[in-house]
Image 1 (cartoon, helix red, strand yellow):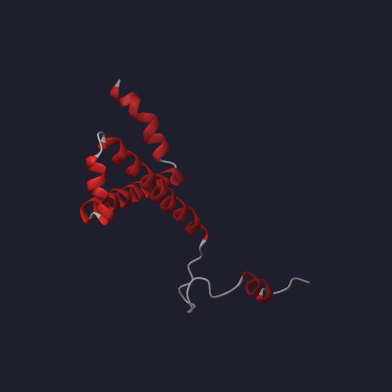
Image 2 (cartoon, one colour):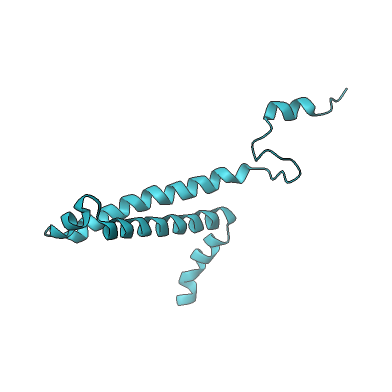
Length: 112
């Protein structure tokens, strides 16, 4: 039975787009955890003291981590999706966006 339970998850991860999103969500989650840990370690504005002085610091930490997780996870996933349409131009200098689409259309040979 345990093998049957893992089949839908494995099938979903075989889809390249979902695998891309899952990997980038994990990257965003790691960045969020590092940032929250860094905020607690650096203690800007006595944030750590304010959180741990509360009667239930777990809720405050969970809300802080969840908000950073949503922000950084969605930013990482969005940037991965937007980077899918880039063309690799290794032979031309000037960066990725050096030619406008209008210039590419204007240089195409015309069919008559």
